[in-house]
Image (cartoon, rainbow, N blue to C red):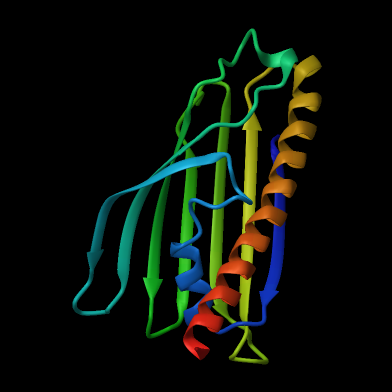
Length: 174
């Protein structure tokens, strides 16, 4: 059984501002592990107005010394498929790791929606799952390491989005 984490955060910014900030998130100093993001495909459904995007993430994180014999410090890849529905004001992202898939599977689903009680705010929900294919004596340590890295990433990602929202709103006011 892998590790699962669910986090929610409320941005005191409109859905339009927060989702725009998402597209401007990389590169940034809060998430230095993301080296590059490439758009592989983007299409808009003319009937619904929904936008579908597929992006490839290239990243690099330091490999703990106890894993250096197993995982080489080379770029890692993940694929993100997203759907933006401007009519319903809902954005859903699904991210899946591609690298080292024989050792680890990481899946993440994120949603952005207006806050149910204040439409000028945005609720961000993040669900993450990590499954290691490793011997029991390593699995607990790997699970702990993965959860801590994810939690750090959550906080850094929130800071990045918040800063971009503040910058966008300052720019629009001037």
